[in-house]
View 1 (cartoon, rainbow, N blue to C red):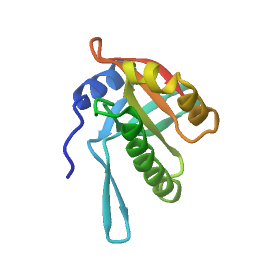
View 2 (view 1 turned 90 degrees about the vertical axis):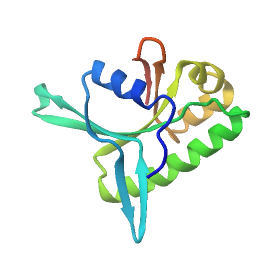
View 3 (view 1 turned 180 degrees about the vertical axis):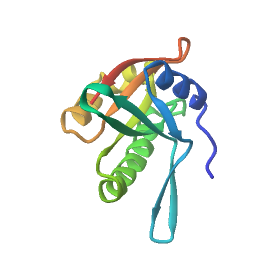
View 4 (view 1 turned 60 degrees about the vertical axis):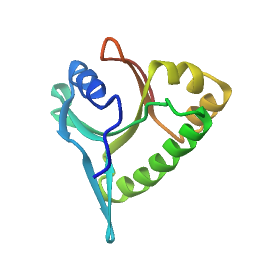
Length: 138
């Protein structure tokens, strides 16, 4: 199994505060003979709709030497996981979880806005200090 991201526990706590139940840690994907591991699986009961919403969450810290290298790696994983989820569990939405600084430095810049507008990625930003989700960016 891969190592946990630096902010793994922070994101777990933020999701729980936001009303999610962590169902898988990690969320395992299997394709052919390959095993892949998305950081988290979570579910939220929707009482009004008598159902639930399921998500998978890939956590990225964006603390490397290059924001663009971090973005390229994150998008590669995200694309692979999304393709597999679309076949195995199409009702589960995939999100990229990024710290607040990455939201400002990457996803509120033109390159990030392009990714979000084109529908290439869904993400949420979290506060490291408060361990809370501060913004969903579907």
